[in-house]
Amino acid sequence: MRVRKAVLPAAGFGTRFLPATKAIPKEMMPLVDRPIIQYAVEEASASGIDQIIIVIATGRSAIEDHFDSNASLERWLEDRGDIEMLRTIRRISEFGTVAFVHQREQLGLGHAVLMAKDLVGDEPFAVLLSDDVMLNPNGAPVTRQLIDAHRAHRGSVIAVQRVEPEEVSRYGIVEPLHEEGRLVEIRDLVEKPAVGEAPSDLAVLGRYVLTPKIFDVLEQTPSGAGGEIQLTDAIRELTHEQPVFGYQFEGVRHDAGTRIGWLKANVAVGLDSEVADEFRAYIRGLDLRD
Ligand code: UTP
Image 1 (cartoon, rainbow, N blue to C red):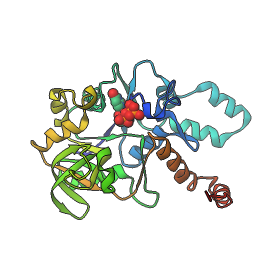
Image 2: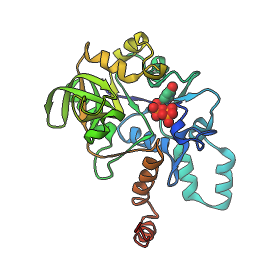
Image 3: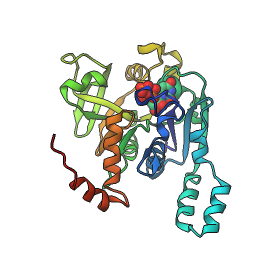
Image 4: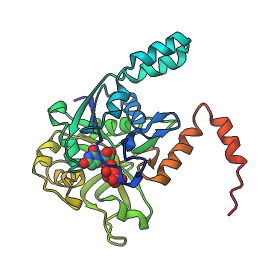
């Protein structure tokens, strides 16, 4: 079955980015000139997804407003003859269907995904954590790569990437059953293992294609670390019922939910933007000695 729908959880508190995230979700922080979440919506759309479901925290409307049309702004741009910006603004509200579901309490990523159950229904779907910014300017979007792997192998497919041995304790880590090229059949997952105790150096990152079975599993998943319903715990359970694969995707990932990751993502996007030449010249001119 074609993967038509994507769930974008965006209801977290974003505590690692306070105070910037006190009044706006971290997904609305800009990378150069677009909010982080728009990159993920564009990635999903370029991957063949035509129904986007964004999970937002109750009472936070900035993301909903961003993807809605803004008639007075459009009229103002039209009156000024700024047709290029008018097109850019209109395109944002024309990404196929964008639906919103509310997560009333921040009970974790697994719980956020579960909020989309009725809108997804009984079909495989993608999950994109937009604060994991995935850039692959010269190749297929990362979500497209996972969808292709899902088509070829069935089962659920999650994005994985090798990390430095001392970094394993920051991620969900894969215990591989079998590796072939970029594909890894997963035997089990370990959430944030201690350095030296990880079953591999393959970390789970924020892109997934999941079968709808995950919803049944999530409904049975008790709260785990931090009192939250963890998506990793549910995927772990899923590995015992259905094949789950890791896909070592092509592309660069920046964790834009942290200060340093957000800065790096801005540099990467800036060097591939309209202001790239000026930005490159500026960076070259910096005195970077200590
Ligand atoms: P994070 O683990 O980054 O948590 O969530 P967070 O709350 O957003 O940020 P920190 O750790 O406090 O800085 C991973 C993804 O899951 C979403 C977040 O919006 C992010 O996209 N999420 C997390 C929810 O939608 N709901 C939750 O209850 C928790």
